[in-house]
Length: 115
Image (cartoon, rainbow, N blue to C red; front, side):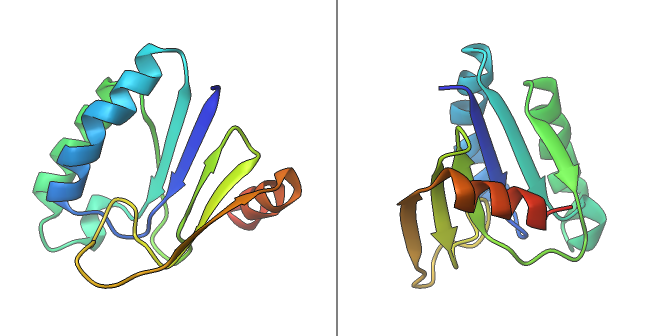
């Protein structure tokens, strides 16, 4: 309803292209969207990803870059947590796990862990 935070240490061109229209549609509804991932310079296909990161920013998606992250989760309105081994904006072909929790305290702790 108000805020989406996605932490995905790995991003792929295919997954970003799939997710971007949906994420931009949220920003157009005045929902704050923040994506934390590794910078384009950390990837072999960094130029293509940088173009997509720039498009995301132009669409109102706040992007934060951090090289040494490995956490994988999404937070909705600081109370719904999707947590597991899935790179939400990256590789999605292997079998991964994802758990949904409703907990403002867990969401708060995960946000603190990013600092």
